[in-house]
Length: 67
Image (tube, rainbow, N blue to C red):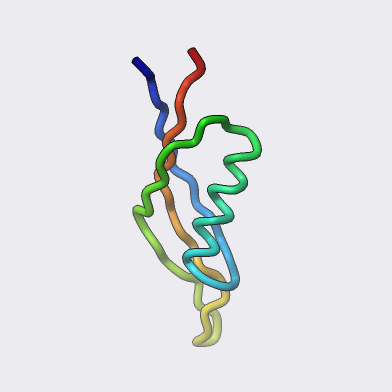
C-alpha cells in the first residue's frame, strides 16, 4: 500500500505551454522523488503589445511518500 501527495505547480516558458509544463516537472524532479503523474489543469499566457511573451502551464503533480 502506498500514499501519494498531490501538489500544484506553475511552469513558465517563452516558447510553448508544453515547455512550461516540462520546466515545472523537471524542476520538481530535482527535489522530489518518485514522481508519478502530472496532469495539466490550466494554461494561460502573458501578452504585451499584442504579442505573447510568456506561456504558463499549471500542473497537478503526484509523488509517493517514502515507506
